[in-house]
Amino acid sequence: MQARTGHRASGSATEVPTAPLPPRAHLLLARADGELVAAQLSSQPWEQFLHAHLAALRAGAAVLAVRGDGGGRGAPRDVWRLLERAAPQLASWSAYFAQGASLRAAVEAGRLDAVSADRAAQALAVAQDMVDAVRVELGLAAPPAQVRAS
Image 1: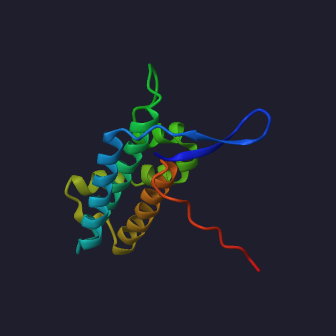
Image 2: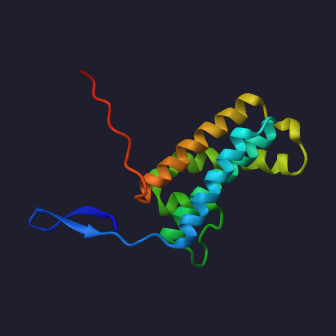
Image 3: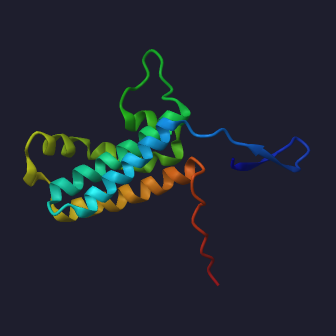
């Protein structure tokens, strides 16, 4: 079990145990990893883009599996908008992939020439960063070390 440092009203730090992640979150992250591998092995830009986008989508869904989707009447049903509400610190990734949703739809509709090699490579890099950020957010990885200027 992992522990996170919390603060009492007096200001002294205490260890507050975190709840284990639901199995669905682990499954979604494993599927995100699979999509990243598929993207890395893809020889076609459209295929690389599609797998990268799906990796990010599954990582976002993992966050929602842990935090809930904030549903209710009138709540957004789009994963990217739900993720912005559930984890505002991941909003830049949500916005990036929300902007790419129409391109993903075009690829799924058969417009395989809609994605350039540069756009596909960029999507893969951003998806990898997002999956890493989600792992940190969910307490599954340590945040990267801060680099200090000397």
